[in-house]
Amino acid sequence: MRLVAQAFHQTVKRSTDLAARYGGEEFAVILPNTDSEGATQVAQEIHRAIQHLSIPHNASDVKPYVTLSIGIATLIPTSTIVPLDLIEAADQALYQAKAQGRNRSFVHKISIPMED
Image 1 (tube, rainbow, N blue to C red):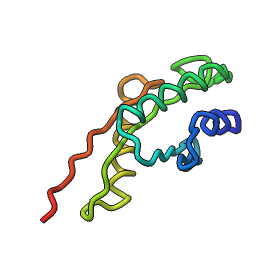
Image 2: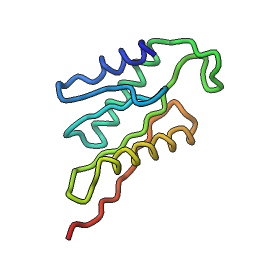
Image 3: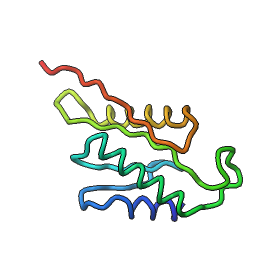
């Protein structure tokens, strides 16, 4: 897990970016002022970094080495959005990435309610 964490920290480069462990085998990467295209590029860099490590994963039915499924969600904050909305969207994206075969990224489009 430490090697994976190091790969995350090396991939997020801006001082405002944050990579952190989020639960057992999950990580969160917060990229302020980043659109879905930019987040997808960072996800691809993370995939390459993990692939380059070639960490053995004997229990995997996907690959013989550690892989990542990445859920991506981006939004522009409004007064109607709460932080949990972003977390739920990222979780949905992660679920989709896993459902599509794992070792991939998926972007979840967040529908933003109209403000009054």
